[in-house]
Length: 255
Image (tube, rainbow, N blue to C red; front, top):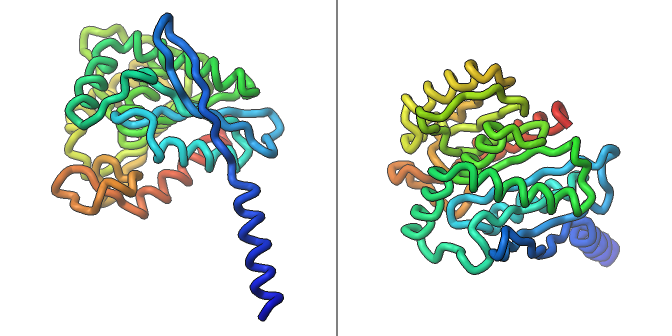
């Protein structure tokens, strides 16, 4: 009995010892201070690949940080981007909607903030030729913007992100590979928006994929989203696990 308890205690200690740690990293966009979180893997993969994580509309959150830690445990350098600024974080959903809306409209500024975060990921030690951008909700929109802007990344992954694009924008050829992980019942992303996005990808000659998850709505990876689908946001365990596996397969393919 004592041996079993000792074994369990040692195993628990090993788990905590191998779990990645994040460190706060301040960086700048002009005079504005941004504050993200980075992690250097204890045992990096051979070519030192990196993953940039773009948070949802409330800004840097535990969900994004947890994703970064899990990726670091798998051997990827990881960094959680701060899009809004250290002293400009939204305090409620109303503010979050306004701030996210600003960057969706001013997409060049969004792309710039993403690039600044990519620079920090590279400073951590990530191979600049082996990077993928992933994002959740508003961050998923950012991942698509990284592809539209042809930032120097090998691929982008959008988890339940918005796919809209101003029709007046020029469609350029997209180089990064694109993976969209989408809730089949997500009514926040209308059918027309999906059709326009897919048409855009074809026109841009992109290498793209789109996975649909049954019974899933917006924010299906967020455990704090509740379970009421009628609200339009809800956690879905199956979709969460399946989309994560899709991400890992994508990372192995493009990195």
